[in-house]
Length: 145
Image (tube, rainbow, N blue to C red; front, top):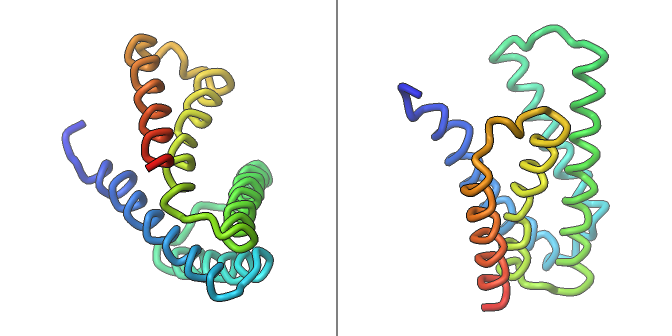
């Protein structure tokens, strides 16, 4: 890769924004906003961002397959986000205890990518095993701090 821009744009900035998102999600839960209201407001903000992006970037044509995959991704994200919001609201769990566990989502993505998208041949299994152990150890260590 010749440029770091893809890493900054597709990795570092999303990590920063998602980290900030978790803080506002916790603030929403402590402001007596339940999971349903949170998801409605969150979804409206996502829809507005999509509208603005469509006006700026002139998106590719809509396809049934693309819409189906996007809707499935949105449903999975909404379900996970709703569960997080519920745990924050109903149980008062500290966001700093949950966030390290969320970081394990990369392992789910990696496993699905390897098994169902045929990306397993591109993986170094030694590095994969070491990284998995480090991620799990880090999540357990930080969430128990």
